[in-house]
Image (cartoon, rainbow, N blue to C red):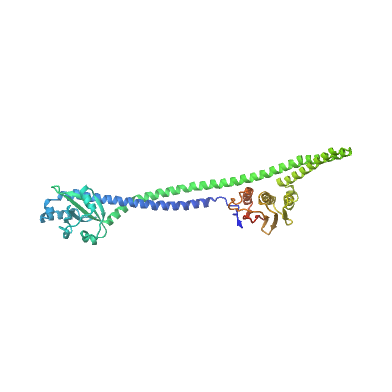
Length: 442
């Protein structure tokens, strides 16, 4: 069989627990946002560092290299090459630039601080050709496996930045500067480190501001839970008072009037029979019998609305009165209650309410043949069990007892929690239903 969840008193929201859960969730969100922000800042920093590297190369190319270009350098005249080499070594080859090259459009190396490359020809890459054609500055990680880069293999990872320059005669050349990539990483790190403390501080302030709000919300939820329980208790008390009032009015009013009417009709039937008016006497006897049946029906209803025997004669008598109409319907019933239960009035009323609701559901929905109401006790608890052999149901599919007429049991579960009791429902389709409530001894 499948068992519905049990509830206990004290399950109201805890402020400390709610704030702790919120704080944990906030820390997780803080970590996620921090990691994402770090990755974004790192990318931004790398982009800024690359932009700075291109700007540096453009400054060197336009401000130093291009003004010192000569036709003699392009033709490879030693004096012009030596003069240009002095300029490069004094003013260009400074950290982070570690190597420079000048190329013609045909791929000939006009100048390099590595003299072994001067005069050699290599095929220019597509990006380099595009830079010459469009006059743009471009960059990329140097491919040290290429022949023209063999002399840079001992310098580590490099970034090459290239841009077109022109000789005084207007001849286009490609200026290429190689920079240590570690300088790019360092520059990127400096960028994101400049923003990271402010980001962390902002996230931390936002996180700390949320904690008092979470505590306030948790307190409001707990207060709402207590108010709901108080309203439920008042509703139950009001329901019990109203049941008692209605039962008293019916018993002292309508029931007594119908009882008197039945006696009056019976006496009138006897007088009419003595006058040999049999037809009228039969009608009066029928009316008297109908009045007596109405009295019996109302008294059965009074037991269901508010059992007078619960406080007067105890739980055993009230349960017997409760199942009496069920027995009259043809169900085999059994009631077992130990003597001298010695229960608190509230606990006794709770046990009866559970039995009353369960018996009502059994009659209305279970299509059962047998019904047993059993009360047992030990040193710690008193338990009431109502079991039938009806068609049963799936508590998980019925909202744990809230469907097909079982909404009353869901309400009783809340009442049980308030009294520190446990209400469980064992049922399965075709396997009957067993409802048990356990009340702690006080």
